[in-house]
Length: 608
Image (cartoon, rainbow, N blue to C red; front, side, top):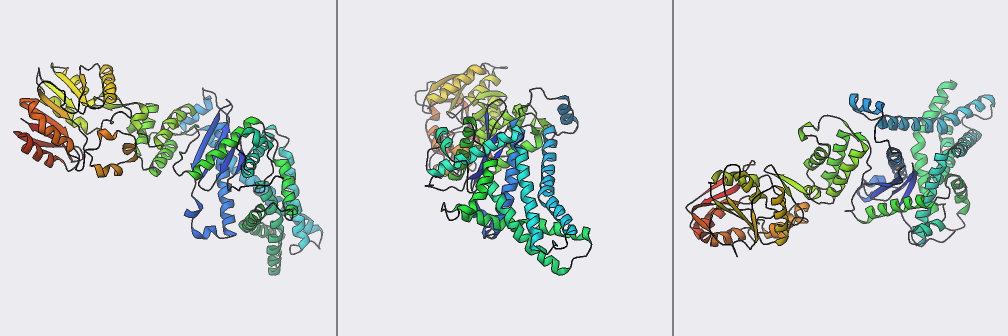
């Protein structure tokens, strides 16, 4: 066996048509569905340092690891079963009926039943049956009583024989042989990494399919350790004399063994870790039985299975190395409430507003947001579309950039990283502007960005008036999108590149603006989706956030007619200072403030 140049804490297991890999901070499951496509699910798990200190003590950590592996492994197995077999596009009549009347999917029932049945079979095979058969022999042979060593050696022998028979029985099934091939791919991939080789299909092929930390080896150690632990417990029980009633004594023995499983798991875990620390030939005799069993539970994988394991390993390692690595979710048939809860939980961890989850589901399923509380089953295809948006939103990219447009004042405005996303409060500015317009007026919209304000004013005024609208912006990229939006909404708006008034000719009855008003020092405190994605040019208003208002006040007298009005949007706490600036610098005739729905002084109206 080749010498390993590096060790990894990443381990895994085979699942249905795929592989799960788990590290310290994340786990990734990759499944090849019946269409031949690789599907990935990656979730974060609590890092060991964030767990309670007592859970990291020797022997205790083994129990914690065993329970966690059992729970996460079962979840991965069940999740893989949901995605491995792709359903027909048209659901069956039974599936439709259950979704309509019970609001559950057939897959959920099968999954739950399989989980319960699996636990019951495991308890029956490896605890109840060995205990029962040994009790029968004990009744027939007086020397083999509960407190004797022979009793527990025989019971352990039965347990091992049942385990071996179970493995051999599973080899009869093609699906299980395929699972063992994925098991081999998992081992080979981890070994390849620990050899120090690049993770390629060809390199992985050459690696051994036997590994020190395999679950099969762990089970063998458990079988051996259980003989000693159960023998000690049985000896202690024999000193009590028990009840003398065979059926009751049998039940007590069974319950005690069930209770001692965590102890067995804790000891076995420490031994497994100890054996895995070295490749010395001195420990080979202890490893050999596990290797022999692995020869049965692993098989040589094909290239597609290796690809699956490599992808799972890389994603698990990425989750460990990068705390910001994105999670991924399988697209499966599920309840609407369950999907929404999962999305909101994921957004909460990233400090993303939970309402975005509702918007995504509402838009993709064409359901009004106020009706999302009505339970229904989301199909696999619908779920895939929702998750595609959800996962991109988790990266921090704003929701409306992802969709490519936003609704503003009833008009569709295309948006991307070239422009700010129009906010609902800006609609107050448009409402005030439209109310002030007269037939024949001319309008200038400064810092027009996407053109949302100019387009909404032009379209609303065109219903009963004739007005001219000019929008200016310093960014030609923004203006290109604004012109596209004007065409989309059939709005009669002219756009011109200009730094506020520079290069603008004429006078206007109405001047509007939603200029940059964020204080420079506060830029770093903005939400990630605003700070990292929306253009800084449209946000940074200088030291106090009022640079653009001063510049507008300095020149507005040359561009506004007598009796004209200027309507500006501003940030919280800025309105009164803006009024002072315009009274001092622009000598305006009057000024007033309009509050938004949250009670914030949001719009400043200035008359000349």
